Amino acid sequence: MQHFPIFVALAGRRVVLSGGGEAALAKLRLLMKTEAHLTVFAPEPAAEIETWEREGKLRLMRRAMEPGDATCAVLFYAADEDAAEDARTVALARADGALANIVDNLADSQFITPAIVDRDPVTVAIGTEGAAPVLARAIKRDLEERLPSGLGALARIGKAFRRFAEALPHGRPRRDFWADYYFKEGPRAFDAEGAEGAQAALDGLLEQHLNAAEKPGHVHFVGAGPGDPELLTLKARRALDEADVVIFDRLVAPEILELCRREAQMVDVGKEAFGPSTAQEDINRQIVEHGRAGAQVVRLKSGDPTVFGRLDEELDAVTEAGLAYTIVPGVTAASASVAAIGQSLTKRGRNASVKLLTGHDMKGFADHDWKTMARPGEVAAIYMGKKAARFIQGRLLMHGADPETPVTVIENASRPDQRVLAARLSTLATDLSEAEMAGPALTLFGLAPRAAEAAAQELIKEAL
Ligand code: SAH
Image 1: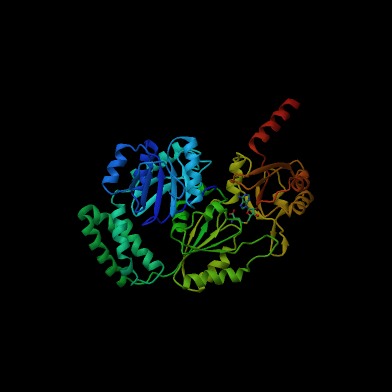
Image 2 (image 1 turned 135 degrees about the vertical axis):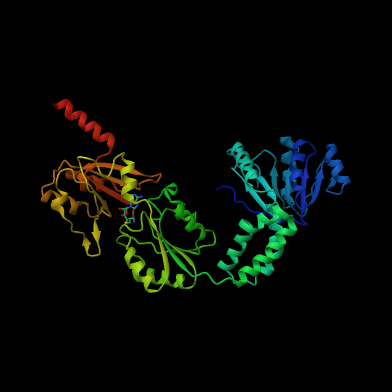
C-alpha cells in the first residue's frame, strides 16, 4: 500500500485551490461538500466559481497565487491544468506547509483524492493508487446502487442517539442494538415513516434491548479450510463476522484472519510442530474463560476442526464448563490436496477406503498398520508427514510395499504458493529433503498427479 487512506478533519480549516477551469470545478464540487474554508486563486475564473463566491461558498482571489497565500492551509490543490504553473503553485503551497495535490499528476502529489460514495456521515473512499480508475468507477457505481439513499439519514439519527445507547452494557449488547437498528428496524421504519419513524424505532428498540436477557457465551469450533478464503463455508464466514474473540492456530492463512470482525480480539495460540507452542490446557482455559464471560468465541482451526486438531480435548473442556458449542466443518488438507493434483481420494476398482493418518503423534513418529497400507492400490493422506518421511518410507518398504508406488507431496495446497512434488516411495525421503518445503505439506501415498500418471501409462503402452 503506497497510500494510506485517512479522513482529514476539514471543518473550519483552510483549503486552497489554484485554477479556474474544468479541473478546478470538479474538485470544488467535492470540496464544497465539506465544511472547509475554501479559497480559490484564479485570474480568469469560470462563471460557476463566481456564482459560488456570490453565494458565500468560497473566497475568490482573481489573481495568480503568490508566496504566503497558502498559509495555515491543510490541503492545497493545483488545478491550473498547466504543468509549469502547477509546479510553481505547489512549491509555494508546500513552503507554506500545506499537503499538496496536483490534479491528474499522481507522481508529484503528496496525497490523492479517492472516488467517493457519499452517504454523509457514511463516506466510502475508493482508491487504486492510479492503477485502475475504471475499476474504481465500477466499484463506486456498484456501491451507489447497493447502499440505500436513506443510509446517511439513518446514520445521522443514530449518531445523535449514541449517548442514550450507552445505557446498554458495552460490547455485544450495544452492538446487537445497533445491528437491529441499522439492518432491521431502522431501514424499515425510515422507508415507511421517514426520519420520525427511524427516531421512534430507536426509542422502541432501546426499551426492548434494555429488558432483554443477556445472551450467553457460545463457542464455535470453525474449520478455516486449507488457506484459500473462497474455500470457507458460509457458516464459517458468518461466525467470523460475529466473533467477539478469535482463538486461532498458526496454520490459519492471514487472508482468512483479515475476514474476522474488525473489533474481535485476536488470540494467537500458534502451534509449531516441534517448536514452542501454547500448551493445550492453556488453550482450553482461554476458550472457557472467554465463553464464560459471555463472548461469542470462534476457535479457528486450519482445514477441518475434526481432523488432527485435538478437538476432543477442547470439546471436553467446553462441555465441562457447561458452555454451548457448534462445530463448523471445513475443507480438510487432504481434500484440497487431491483436488490440486486432479485425483480422487477413492476410486472404483482401486481403493474403496482411504486412510487419514498423522506422521507423528505426541510420542514421536506414529505407528500404523503398515502391512495393510503396503498392499497395492492403497491410498493414504499423511498429515504432518514431512519429518517422518524417512520413517514412513522404511516401514512401508519393510512391509513389502512396491518401491515404485507413487507418492505426491502437496505443499500449501489451495494457496497461491502451492507446490506439488511427484515422487516414488523409493525416492520420497531424498526428494522431500531436496525440495526444502517450509510450508504445511500433505503426503498422498498411492496417488500421482493425473498428468504424470497418464504419461507413465503411455510409456508402459509403448514398452509393450
Ligand atoms: N485440521 C487440519 C489438519 C491439521 S494438522 C486439516 O483438516 O487440514 C496440520 C497438518 O495439516 C500440516 O502439517 C499439513 O500436513 C496439513 N496441512 C494443513 N494445511 C495444509 C495445506 N494448505 N497444504 C498442505 N497441507 C496442509
